[in-house]
Image 1 (cartoon, rainbow, N blue to C red):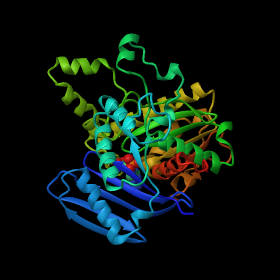
Image 2: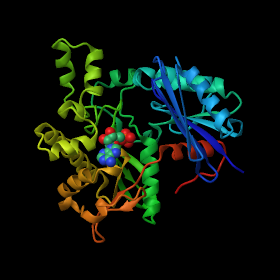
Image 3: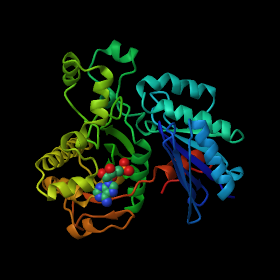
Image 4: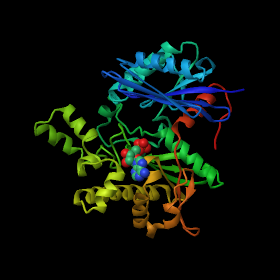
Length: 399
Ligand code: AMP
């Protein structure tokens, strides 16, 4: 029996979607609605090798979901066959450690969690409400970015700040990109012919947002993002780790809280350091002798190496490391720079393998490398479809 599931990823002005048949894991449709709330919005819908587009104003998520339904009605696949809808949900706090069916309580919990994720949860909730209105007869599920890390050890998730304040405001490390870290660690174990429970792994999810995780015998024990997705690695536009004293200093120097938030989330990271956040442009600038781009690249690699080395210590040694997401999957220069610095710790990269672009999981280390280094394409939508299917009573699927 086919099991088509609609997966939605709602941002403040966009909704990405896919329909995946959880039975055979085939992709039946993909699409993107952009510029919601602007004078002219756009929807791009792909199914059976064809692309359909429309542009008209969608003032809010409800209007955007109506446009989505119209696209499916006109070009297929039939939405009436969809068995469930899965919603990517950024912040599940300490309450959600797995995919759950959405009811009024869950929506209220997401509203309550919104102060922890003001940029992400409100558009997610708008997307859920609009989709429930458009597709009222199927169950809707929330898949949380934080769920995979919900059981980090206390020593990893606890910030050393006043206990009462931390408890009152739910301040702790939550971690994000969990759907990707979960998927990639499973896929890497499968691809290596091993069980995740027998491996010490590090997963580097390097996209515009970036995070790294340490996974011991299938259980995550550390990850670089924190209360929010701002902590950790240097990212496209986010600072990652900084001295927390900088925030107070900026404030005392005249910046409002919202300005500081925008500075650290949108104008920092690679963009802040060299004016570019696409690694193709950064590589070209480094090549052309741009000193800012070179420093930005070096800072990025330094931070990543620092985390990987620390995670090796926490894991007590690592068997395999995966590079994934836009930068991790495509930028051989980043992988080479990281592995070169870690050569003394058993990272022996094979340059020819590293240069290969297969679009599939592949090993890029030498045959005798103590640490197996892999490129593993992530697929968050497929992981979401698997989790929804399982939440509906289907068999758990691992690679
Ligand atoms: P993601 O957030 O996973 O979609 O990753 C997006 C980022 O991946 C972009 O901002 C680029 O920096 C990077 N990226 C995408 N394609 C390439 C490529 N071919 N080479 C280097 N970096 C790339």
